[in-house]
Length: 85
Image (cartoon, rainbow, N blue to C red):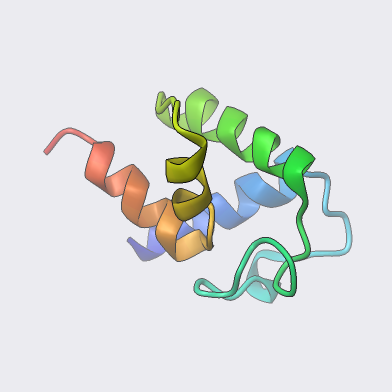
């Protein structure tokens, strides 16, 4: 799980072009939107594309997407739950 979270942080930084952010700057449980990393709705679309591109996971329901994209931790848990055992 730690390896997945680290990988996700790098992918988020690259996908959103967060030039002044390092993976260690992102707290696993900090909100990605609003007060946390400060992402917006356009960024959420980029994160959905990231999930589809790297993990072959397509999120259809926007309400589910909000829960999934709350934090790096919630994204990692979702990805793990969708991976074959």
